[in-house]
Figure 1 (cartoon, rainbow, N blue to C red):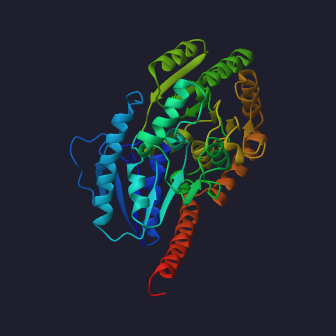
Figure 2 (figure 1 turned 90 degrees about the vertical axis):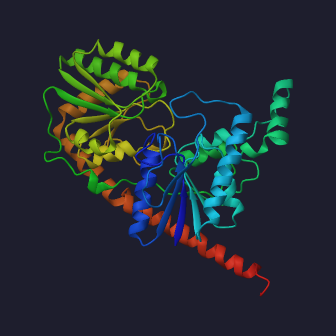
Figure 3 (figure 1 turned 90 degrees about the horizontal axis):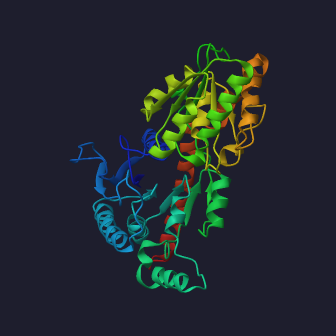
Amino acid sequence: MKILFISNLYPPHYLGGYEILCSQVIKEMQLLGHETIVLTSNHGLQTQDSIPGIHRLLSVYPPFGKPPDISRFRRFSQSRLNQKKTENIISSDNFDAIFVWSQLRLSLGPARAAEKSGLPVFFTFNDDHLAGYLPARFCPTPLGIAKYLRDRLIFEEITTTGLKFENTTCISQTLKDNLLARGLQISDSRVIFQGIPVELFPQKDDPGSLHSPLRLLYVGQLHEYKGVHIFLEGAARFARKNAHQIEIKIAGEGPEEYKNRLAELAKEIDGRVIFLGRIPHSELPQLYRESDIFVFPSLWKEPFGLTHLEAIASGIPVISTNDGGHGEFLKDRENCLIFEKGNSAQLSEKILELSSNKDLRNSVILTARETVEKDFSLKRYSADLEKFICEKVRTHGIHAKLASPSF
């Protein structure tokens, strides 16, 4: 098959795991014998690159790095432009299917062009960004009524109104439930758990061994809802209570205000706290293997947990909250240790338990690695996506033949 992939960003330009996963899946689809074309934005480029099969023609609004803009007029104009560019790409080739990935700040123009084409169209939901395009719900106030009418009479095109979302996948049941609760009509969406390229995250030579000082790691975005301050508070409590030297590495980026708050908390810790900023994804395997414990303190319902999988594949144990998609594969005292979100005292206790109990540590590491290899590899994820696509393309072809005048 020839598949057109549409995404707001595409490596080497990316926000996080969503866009990286897109590129990884595309490579797997190519290995499975499919031809792929990518349509993405020109964000981050001064000039067009010359990579075959990648068209950086779309625009995001506003550019990433700037606050979101709610201007309906600008979004309407951008959506029309992106839709036209997508229609041109679709009409220039003979595609068998279109796979739409993240549309964050991209507008729904490309999605509308895809559904308008008559080809089988697929959507994968790795977060809840699409809910931001839902039309305003009715609210019996003057402003509420105005917003309701605005999104239905003037700016319907920049909302999800009219989009069918016939073939969709969600990376977790948690995410699917959240999107349904917010009003996205995807009751038939298929849950297909994400996977990682396990071969890129080889297990460390001495899984279960500890350094002195104890090395703790966090990888992810730096926002309050990610709970990184809880991580620092729990680590500080652990170090004080047990007179234990620690070294903390934090990889990720976020708003300056929150980073300044984390820097103040870091001063209270008896040990080193190193803020690495955003680091290339290719450097993560080594960072995991150099660490002793991975901590994930998120305060919100995460759609999934790719960094969990990367860490445990690398042979380091995980201490995490479980209120989200990651809770669908994390099992307390089997492949991780769980602590209550927001509870820094409990996190401190879990760090002590894991660092002082070698048998528990080794057991968790072994089971976790088996979990990833068996159920959460990129090859398994890509194979499941391919099976889904082929199944729906076949059904689409049958319906098209039945609808033909010759029948």
